[in-house]
Image (cartoon, rainbow, N blue to C red):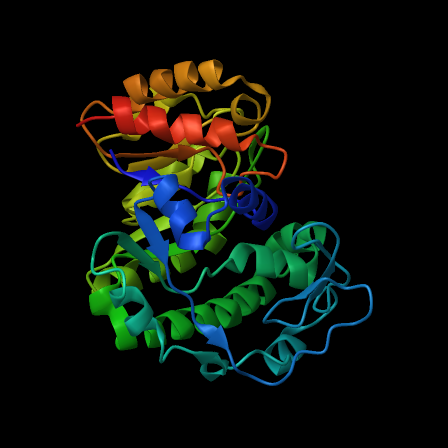
Length: 328
């Protein structure tokens, strides 16, 4: 059974230190079957204000833990002209010349993830503010369309440059947009189909045009949106947060297991953080018993960012159990 290991930088550094391993040796230790290649930013120098921790390609500064929260929403009060005149990034600022060589160094031992992460939903939230974005979907839908259009034009162009340079060395176009919360989808099916699905399909079609599979990371409880994702041609969903409303594994497997690959599903919210190694092994086997029949499952944690407080031995126990028990 394929295994996927994604982790926060803090957990990753802790694990490397505890096990005295470098990055690649740690991935081998956890039996990770995937590797990822990235374009590199080579555009104008990004000036980050004091106190900010990150700046997005669209000029949004963020502050706080991890990627933080946006410090402003520059398009909240903008009209169509101001939206089109905004300082949108240039796809040429991303260097793709090294990607093929980096992917080929693994000698096809692993599935290679490529393409831009493309979190167009999150970027629109940053630019408008979440409440303003939802309001504008009803009051100024053309403004929402314009912002999504510019964002997706940028990401699609970056990924096209990546695939033109290295699609023969890449297996999966991996993108990310969190559309769920602990209690259900962040937006209803009608708004999803009207404003987001056409752009998601654009990425799916782009990946398929290069003979790549397309997988999306999506947090939270978003089960009502899955049929539309399948209809649009999405090949895989990561990371299946079982602690969220509507994400019962038996239901997901029965309804959608023949039509889409599920990746993740072993609870990182409670089991990996709080459980003993024996409990982790038990719960991992339970997930495999549900998700493995018929194939179409990649085993891993229910979130790509395994947190720093997660015991290294629990993550090791999860992957050891999959390796020993997860046979097709």
